[in-house]
Length: 446
Ligand code: GLU
Image: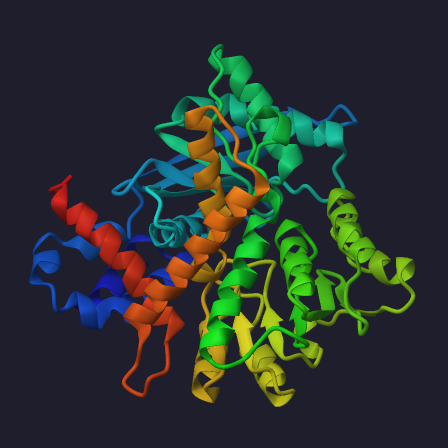
């Protein structure tokens, strides 16, 4: 593989799509050596094919706000790769959503889904609709308008969307309601992250955060460390951060920082059930600020304009957005003695930050391995929907445990270095890539 030529071609075809180009480069750099040992991949031009989405739907979404004004947003669905199963991946509603962001997310999703051990292809979608400050009624009208365009391109065996940033249980409810109305036939498994009374899986809301902590547990165990008594700084306060805070606390760690776009909350005494529940209230308020946490709990303090990475901690867990932890943040964490960073958000760290962590020799694992428990549990939700039954929390949790352990094993298998240490970035990328590449090879040139 000629990495520079492939990247130059991509940059020419997709100018300025920085997140997408960043995600592709990271994967290709990790797999280059292994890829070159497989001339059959080279012959079938697997890399050139795997980096491009199968297709992208772009559509206009027009809706009416509470003031009676007409609003127009853009909607997208990127169907990235279906070599190992139907397209699967979340929807992101955020003002910064654009094709580059959704292509990076769809690309990552393809390998993440391969790691889960379940048969799911990769996809992503969403809109530049900004949920901040919107009423529930506005969110409902937007979701309905979005689904009016999307519904014909998704389906139980075609493409199964779910949540992501800005899309949680409430949005999935509105989207599903409109889908069923348009389809005129009940398709239970066309979206995942559904409510518990209409086909949702127990533990799906918690799954991304829980899975991440199960992965971190395995990583620490192998390194002779433990979560017991460790201090954790995490970014965000949405669904993913909530699940991570809940499981981290249950496993004996102390979550001493959470953050939002407005600043960081230092929480020296760790989380209580009440504090964890309050994170959900913050998310549901649609205000996208974390400051009220410190007003509600006086043992916590809010500092505006600062990130979670300014707090001295053992473990850093980015749980919010891509590139939220940069080279300077990594240097600050390392200077403060942080010895582990696990990306819970997709591509939460910049290449400079990853490089700094790897140079310093601390434990680091990438989002596609760490956060795969979310989509894996979506896969379990699809299975339950197909079988027309629902498993108990214990059953789902056991399966999630097993999947996260398998992902960790795959990372170790493909990422073990000559000095005995595990490069989790390489391990996750190679394991995910090999599975999808092999599937593409066996199914011919299509
Ligand atoms: N958006 C989540 C992710 O990045 C979940 C996707 C899903 O459940 O389909 O993996």
